[in-house]
Amino acid sequence: MPDAGPDPTPATPATSESPEAGSSGTPGAGTSGSPGNLGSPGSLGTPDSLGNPANLGTSGSLGNPANLENPVSLGTSGTPDNLGNRANLGNPGSLGNPANLENLGTSGTPDNLGNRANLGTPGSLGSSRDRGNPRPLADGSSPDGLRGQLRDERPALRRCVAGDLDEFATSYWGTRALLSHGPDLPAPYDDLFSLEAVDELLSRRGLRTPFLRIAKNGAVVGDSQFTGPAGVGAEIADQVQDDKVAALFASGHTVVLQALHRTWPALVDFSTQLSADSGHPVQINAYITPAESQGFSAHYDVHDVFVLQVAGEKHWTVHEPVHVDPLRNQPWTDHAQAVAAAARDNAPVIDEVLRPGDALYVPRGFLHSAKALGGVSAHLTVGMHTLTRYLLVQELAALAANEPALRTALPLGFDPGDPDQLAEILPAVAELFAQQIRSAIPDALAARLRRRTWSSNRPAPLPPLAHAASIASLSIGTTVRLRPGLRCRVIPGDPVVLQLPDRTVTFPPSTQPALTELTSGTDCKVGTLPALPSPDQLVLVRRLLKEAVLVATTN
Image (tube, rainbow, N blue to C red; front, side):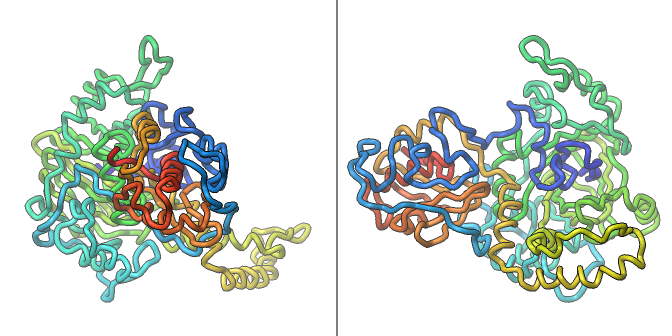
């Protein structure tokens, strides 16, 4: 962004301003090129102390000795963990694909979000794209559907939008820019980020590219101008050099800290909650601009953005789109001349100064630019990688590959660039494709969408040592809950199937009531779960802890 900086080229890894930010097909923003110590706070891997959690990609079962340390199954006489014999709990197998993508567990309110009550009044309007009746939302659902979701408390989203969230969902989301003033919002943003945090990240956290970008007047500085060797004990050559960054900043360059949803604890929690609140993947960058400086000229982003002003003041100008609802492969550079002309000649829909605590919502496609005023300005750019109807089109096309007739070769000597030859064959291909679309069932499409979208945002970080200790000390009375931000779904049957972003795990039918409660997002106490004796509850919860599905809240 402009100062939510412009989307870089697809070849630029992990830029929080590109829709994929580091991977061209999956909105896993900011993970590409991530150094080992910076990037993956929530990944367990397979540490020995945790056992082998389901090999992360294959269907497990409660009876798999590789996944449950000793127990052969919950129903064998192997007396796993000295919990006694397990009466026959079945022989789990594997189930097919789910029917839909319900999210049974994304609740969880990080401490730094607090309680959000009075939202005040709506902020400034900005758009002439009001088309009468609200259009369907970008994720393919109706505004009424999102409005119903927003009736619940959405603490992170409430920090970005003043006024009624139902009104935001129906009148602004994806269609209109909105300025929310700090006094109308629940709290300022100094608990999330600060200028002191910027200095710490640049000087003490061992940042490497691509976690930092530097730009001035739209021109991005080469990495070699602010990186160098890390010194003894670190065989790397691209660590950020704080003295070089200081010199560039002093000369008027904007510093862009990328993928803070992976590297700064308060923003890790905030992004996890905001993704749960909105249903869309989230990434966060910070833009730090010297006084009277501009990092990026007018441009548009291919994802929606919340700009959260942290420090200083910045003058923002927002214009109507020249290309409405751009997809991720339709960057502003494809329309550079039209963008420049519109920013120069058209009246802005928002022309305001953001002060600390203010928030600005900019839908994808809206042109925007910003300039710092009398002092150093710092703002967070919260990128919302909206899911669109075109995503469904892509997955429907992929399903069409199951039709043998669509996999046949084109005629020998066929020239695909010849319109006359295309005219002879295209109607038959289009009809076959239409038949596949008409016969598509939600089950098959949902399975593909789950694999593609559920893993877009990482769940809340899982501290490996503390988590291993909670597994070792698990006992009757321990309180656990679903890992915040983890997408999952329980499918009843024999066996019961737990769908996770990257795999499915199967369980005996008798575990369904307990499993449903454990994945509800509420605190659950071992020993009080329904329909299972206490010893079996221990085995079930231990398994889910090892799968990183649950986290212990008390022990």
